[in-house]
Amino acid sequence: MQNIQIQDSRPYSKILENPRVDSGFELPLMESFYTIQGEGAHRGKAAYFIRVGGCPVGCVWCDVKDSWEVKNHPITHIDKMVQEAVKTSGRIAVVTGGEPAAFEMGPLTGALKEAGFRTHIETSGVFDLSGEWDWVCFSPKKFKKPTEDIYIQAHELKVVIYNKSDFDWAVNHASKVNPDCKLYLQPEWSKSKEMMPLIVEFIKDHPEWEISLQIHKYMEIP
Ligand code: SF4
Image 1 (cartoon, helix red, strand yellow):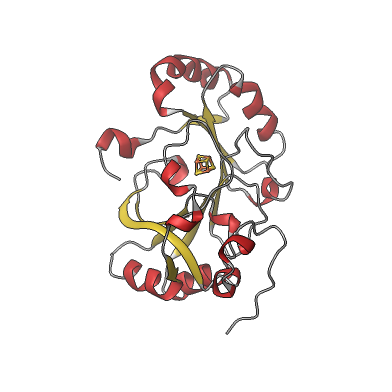
Image 2: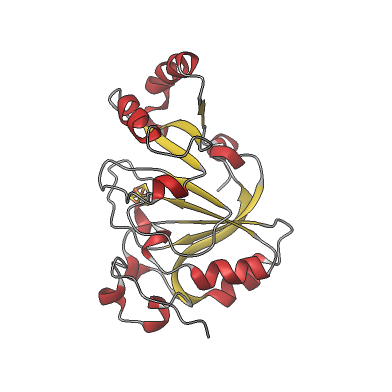
């Protein structure tokens, strides 16, 4: 068994009181499914999604509010997750949430890599990242401040545009990431019609940014 150091920033340790969750060998699993990545730099690629339950960030427009309550999701051994993932043909695993960085991710990413997967995470960046990641998608949220380290770790900055003030906010985050970090603006789904023309004009003026559409929603797949 790996010796995992438990970080103070793990918010669910006291709620779940489960040392196997603390060490990352078991995790609350909301759902897992094989689909097409709909967002960001890897959109259009087949990927196995592992959605970890539990999120304390509280975005008003969150489209997976059912993920928030950590106790609603069955505690599942990571071996079981990987056993399901290897049944698919794809070899990209996207760990999302909820907020997966709220948990120790070393064992899961280790097991996924051993099984031949590229490991991708989608995170709000509010907790220290653990585990070994081939791709870090950092999507900051106004509702909780991200850590400073996530700016160095991010391969992709994805900012959800909900209202006009979000453009300045996006530029502020972009000034802190690595120069090779990819920059995406993504219209919040319910505000898409309203925000799309503004995003188009912004990107025409700031070509370092790209648009990320949630193409899985247009395709009506999970
Ligand atoms: Fe929802 Fe993600 Fe925000 Fe958590 S960080 S509330 S899962 S959008």
